[in-house]
Image (tube, rainbow, N blue to C red):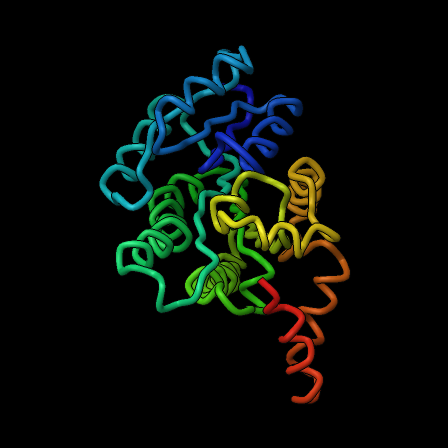
Length: 258
């Protein structure tokens, strides 16, 4: 198969869909996954590009299902040039208001799914001449705020997983890029906070999924370790740990206005 292959988990909306569309424009075979088969079929119908857009119903919390998906990709395409671990979920509310089921779901979606996918596809990718892994984390994994305890913890773990994996694969042909976007203007925000107050508070620096996707793809091509945006929030995330405590408290009070 001449066309390169990219896999985008959580590819039926938001950033995942924007990434998939960009890679289709660049001539890739794009495989998108989701737990919702109806959403997959709708996206496939709307795009009307069956030769290059492929769908696969997948529950990322099921390791056996993930391994079956990897086997399907190997049989069908024989390769995975770019693996984008994008799928995720969030609930922005006080920690004690989370049910155990909600905590488990967030950990499974944001962290375990990334680990399972990477573990399943890495052997195939190591056998290729070149491949790339892209993990979608968040700036919340570097600077947390109130009501994001579970979400921020999982994204911090994704950042550290990406860093460690990058070191392990340094002598191989596989690059690892970790994306740390700030809030993106997608339905994800309303799902995370049904009141809409969070989206209103961050409206001044909301990212578009299209611009975010282009920045991530550019960083992936350049084999950069990280890509973080918007720039002003990225700068804050870098200097925040170095600030005096009284300034950190002031910054935290601004971040906590959800």
